[in-house]
Amino acid sequence: MRAVPPTMTAAVTVGHGGPDAVEVRRDWPTPAPGPGEVLVEVAAAALNNTDVWSREGAYGTADDPGAVAGWRGVPLDFPLIQGGDIAGTVVAAGTGADPDLVGRRVIVDPAAGYEDGLPSRVVGSELDGGFAGYHVSAAERAHDVTGSPLSAAELACLPIAYGTALGMIERGGCRAGERVLVTGASGGVGLAAVQLLSARGCEVVALTTAMKAPVVREAGAVEIADREGDGVAAIAEVDAVLDVVGGEGFGTVLDRLATGGRLVTAGAIAGPVAAVDLRRVYLRRRTIAGSTMHTPEVFASLAGLAREGAVRPVVAATYPLTDIHRAQEAFAAKGFVGKIVLLPDDAAAA
Ligand SMILES: NC(=O)c1ccc[n+]([C@@H]2O[C@H](COP(=O)([O-])OP(=O)(O)OC[C@H]3O[C@@H](n4cnc5c(N)ncnc54)[C@H](OP(=O)(O)O)[C@@H]3O)[C@@H](O)[C@H]2O)c1
Image (cartoon, rainbow, N blue to C red; front, side):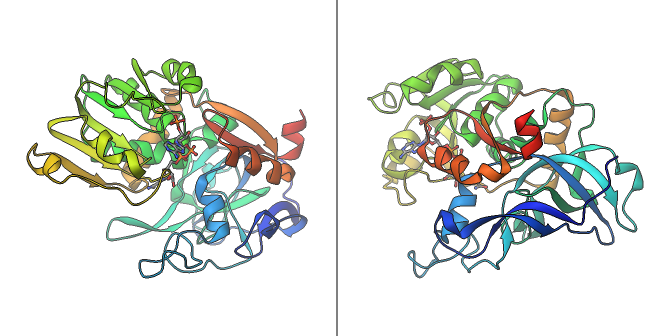
């Protein structure tokens, strides 16, 4: 085991703002694990939309959609290390934390606190995340995946995207043999949903852009509809919809549900305000359910899937941690399928 250095490289967000609000520092103090905590040497950290929107303060509030705020409707505290998707190795344990965790490969559950059954503190927003050399985690949120056949970059794709997708699947009660439509199917959450549903034995229909169709099909979709044409309307009825897109097309997507079908929404990448003909909901006894992230139980079962290698995340590209600005530029351009992952500079160069 390598000695833990007193300082580390970290991408430090110093305030709400544009890309310049993230500063790459090579002298940031390495955190020390407190009671019940472990120190994780970060082997990979994946990017998410929330990193960008939190940095911009783009979440607004219920009263003022234009207000500068993090996802909880209040400004975040800075300086902050963002990055909620962490895979690494435990290198130290604080008092009371299981010392046997030292040396284990882990993925970190980013939901660090719950209120009313919902995540209330999230790694990378309310507490420091993984865009750094080291990360301190509560020991019970560091899930041992030592035997996993997945690489560090693949493991780092799991916590937020796969946690959210598995949470949606559970919320929608999706069962083997059911026909399920996934929107935004080439994205982090969408592709995760395609893989997880397919592993569960569901018949997956994916709504995506034509150029991304081959990877989505390879992930397990048996039917693909082109979201840029009139593909949605041509989809035969489905038992459930998992939607992270929302926006103008929401009503049409909802209308692909069979009578009594369930739609689970967990995102709104095409816009948070959608027009819905309510008659299409009540006359067909359809259900619309919201879902956010995952529960501790869902995360534990995700860690089990990681250990078995039951799903294999698609890593679109990796970048050195110190190249975070270029990585986030590529992420914003959306010309990729799967996840973009940051690696420590020495691992990225290897
Ligand atoms: N509730 C939660 O806990 C939670 C957790 C994670 C993410 N989210 C939300 O879920 C959404 C997706 O996240 P993600 O990480 O999967 O994002 P992502 O990796 O950026 O993928 C989003 C996908 O949506 C599709 N898309 C993008 N812009 C679109 C538009 N204008 N109209 C229609 N489709 C569009 C694209 O897929 P195609 O080209 O295949 O159509 C894109 O690949 C975001 O709104 C995010 O904030 C919520």
